[in-house]
Length: 553
Image 1: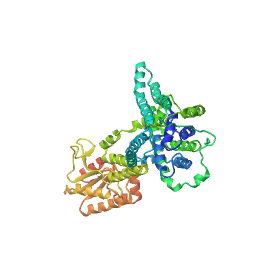
Image 2 (image 1 turned 120 degrees about the vertical axis):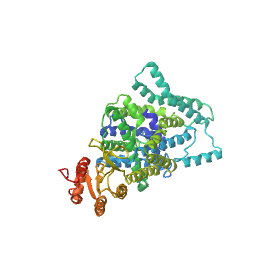
Image 3 (image 1 turned 60 degrees about the vertical axis):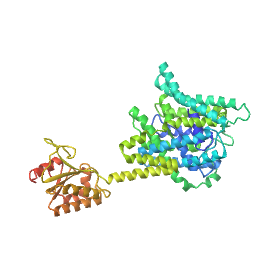
Image 4 (image 1 turned 90 degrees about the vertical axis):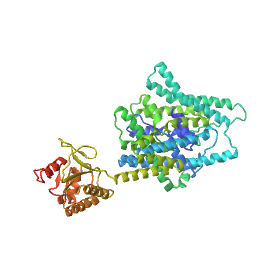
C-alpha cells in the first residue's frame, strides 16, 4: 500500500515520484525510535503534500531541482520546529487548532485534492491550488478547446471505478467466506495494487495503438545522477528565500502534528493506552529529519497506512522498522515496473484515498453544539478553498480565539436558592428553591478578569435592583478559577458601592488557589468576617440574623 500512495502523494506535492518512495523509508525508522504510538505509520500524506504544493507554487517550477530544494527546506524546517517543540515540552500547542478548525481544514483540503486531481485523471496538467484558480484555468482551456486526452481519461476512470468498488467487493466476499475482520481490512487496503496492475495492463494495451496518449510515470531513478541522498546543492540552497518559508513551515509542522496526534489517539483509545504528545513531537521530528536525508518532503502520520499497520497485527514501533526494511529490499525490484504505471492511475489512487474525508457531518455536529464552532469550521474551509491553507488556518484560529474571548466576556450569572429540606443550592429560574427575604445569593459561572468583570457587575446590579429590599448580597464563587488584578479591584469597588447603599457583601465557596491570590493581594483582609466556606454556611449565618457561630473563615 505504501508504494502507490507514496508515488501519488509525491506527484501531488509537485515532486518526482521516487521522492515519495524514499520519503517512506527513514521516517518509519525515526518515528520508531522516539514515537509513543505502536500503530502509527509515518510517511507522505495527502494534506501535507497539498500544503507543499500550495506553498511552493510560484516559487519554482514543479519537478525542477530548485523546487526539490524548496521542498527539502520545508522538511528540514519541520524537523527543527517539531524537535524544538518536543524538547521544550510544547505538546499542548496542538490545542491551538480546535476540532472544527482541523475538520474544516481537512474537508476543504480533500475537496481541493479531489478537484485538482481531476486534471491528471483526464490527462490535463494541473489546474491550480485554489477553487478560483481552478475555475479560471478550466474555463480558459474550455475556450481553447483543450479537451481531455481520451487515453488517459479511460485509464483514470477505469482505475477509479476499480478502486472504489474494491472495498464493498472484498468486504462482501469476506462476509460470505467468514474471514476475520482484520484480514478483510488488510485486503481492502491492499486493493490499490489490483487497480494499479489493471491500469498498467490497460495502458500497455492502449499504447499499442498509434496516436493514443497515455502518460506514464517513466523511469524512477535511484542512484546515478539522482543519488540516494536528498540533500540539494549549495547553489540551490543559497537562492532560497528563508523568511518566506517560515510561516509555511510553522503551519505545516502544526498541521502534521495535530493530524498525527489525532491518528495516534484514535488507536490508543481502542487499546486503553496513552499517547505522549511530547514524544510524538520528537518522533515526527526524527521522521522529517529522515526525510531530509532520503526523499526530501514533509511527512506525517497517515490514517489509512496506520489502519493497515494495526490490522496486520502491529504491537510496537518495530512494525515500522520491518516495513522500512521490506520497502528497501523491494525498491530495486520495483523500480522497473513502476515506470509503466499511468499517471492517471495515481491520480485515481489519490481520489480514492481522500474521498472518505469529504463529509459535512462535522459541520452539522458543530452547529448543533455551538454556532461559533460551526463558524470556525466554515471560515477555515472557505479560507483554504478561496485563498490557501495559510489563510484558512489563520482565519480558523482567529475565529476560535475570538469566539473564546466573546464567550468568556459573557459569563452566566444566576440567583440561587436552597432546595427545600436539603443543603443543595440551585438556580431559582430552573428549580423551586427557597430564598431569604432580606438576602440574595448570586453565583458567577466563570473566572473573573478584565474581559468580563464589567459584565458581571452589570448582571449583579440588575439582580439586586429587581429586589430592592435586599440588605445582604452573597457572591458564590464555586466556579471562579481565577481572579486577576482588574477583577480584584472591581470587587473592592463593588463592595464599597454596596456598603454606601446600606448593603453588606459576602463571599462564599472560594477555591484554595483563588483564596491564596486574594490574600496575597490584600483583598481577602478587606472581607474579613464575610468569607464563608459554603452556601449553606452563609445561609445559616444570614437566617440567624447575621450571628456567626463558627462558619466564617
